[in-house]
Amino acid sequence: MLRAGLVGVTGYTGMELSRILASHPSIRLTAATSRQDAGRRLDAVYPFLQGLPGADVTLIEPEVKTLAENCDVVFLAVPHGVAMEIGADLYDAGVKVVDLSADFRLRDAEVYEAWYKPHTRREYLAHAVYGLPEIYGDKVREARLVANPGCYPTASILGLYAALKNGLIRTDDIIIDAKSGTTGAGRKAVVSSLYCEVADSFRPYNLGKHRHTPEIEQELSRVAGGKRTGAFRGCGHVRHGVVQSSSSARQPGHSGHHLHEADESSCAGRRAGALRGFLEGQPVGPRAARRQTARNAQRARHHVLRHRRHRG
Image 1: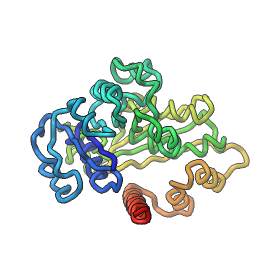
Image 2: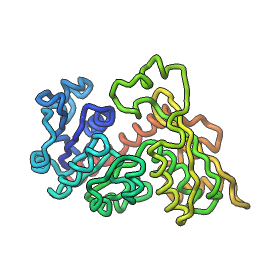
Image 3: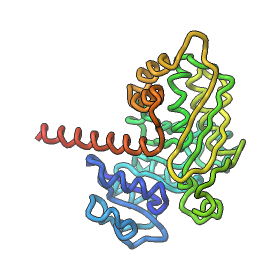
Image 4: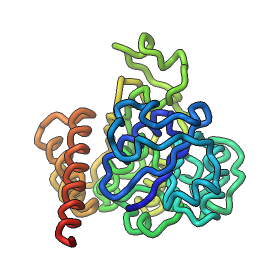
């Protein structure tokens, strides 16, 4: 059983990750940190975890030595700038690190600093693996520092990966249209994220300056063989989840069925169901995606438990 730590458990990212870890068959949450809730049990902060593995963990202040002694892997659910410091220290302590911030996603420190802030741990960028398992799965398994992708980049990159890799579309006129839920803005109280501001409404934000832009361009350009993809995005608020669609001119002689075949081959069929549904005119959206994710997690859990019983 892998021992896991979670730094920054009280944000939306930390909350969702604690729920996932509580039901994971091969990982046990053994440490969780929160400065504001230190001393409280995790299930006191999140009652929905009561009775689940790891719910009895007492929240502590983030301290590298304690985390290194009690964890094999530590997830960082803290803001950019904070993650690079504790992530580098945990890496040096021999712990595997999965960073959910943007601090290790961009391979070029200059690009990071143009969009975020000065990068104080540049030397660790070379150790980081971009954590999209559909593309970098083998490297993720071996890496000790994993840069978990952002929400928009995950949807955008996976949506275009097969088409770009197989040369099915042009690379100079890609348009990505993505809409996200307000939880993506974090749990802090901000007027623009209040229910009365976003309910029954829809609006673009951060046009031309959204910080996920260089991440998307970095990965799509790599897939496209170094060509600049021109993936510029318009984004808007919905209540929950991410809905993303991309468009570009097809290369001559290719159809949607060629795209489906390429997608199955490139991503090992992991997203074939969703794409097949789209091509056949079935509705595809966040609700269907959540249900599919839950089914996949349940299958994985049953597979692990079956394997354990067989070994026993």
